[in-house]
Image 1: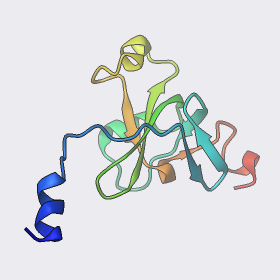
Image 2: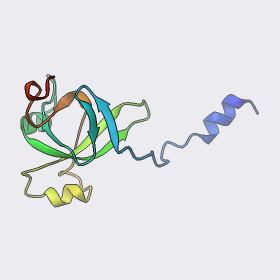
Image 3: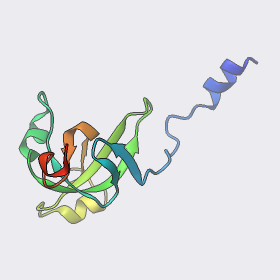
Image 4: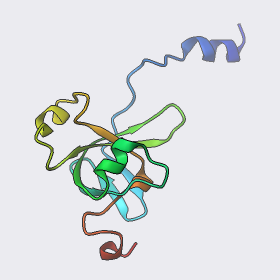
Length: 111
């Protein structure tokens, strides 16, 4: 069996991905537990737009199969925040690194 065939057979799309505690972003290092302000880009979906400007806490930092970073956040003033911390749908939201900024805004952080 060729190495290429072996690599395909060993790939498991459902295998647990390594947990990331931090990621580099334009303001330095983002860590789980950090506070951020949500600033979705143009063309964002309706949920992202509704959350624009809200403060949130980074619940996890995840990487997809194409090595893109996704930041899962829990909105600070969400009455169902505890469900987000339990990773329940509807209270945990995913944003890209380009869709969040420090809580004081980009200007306050020198960005």
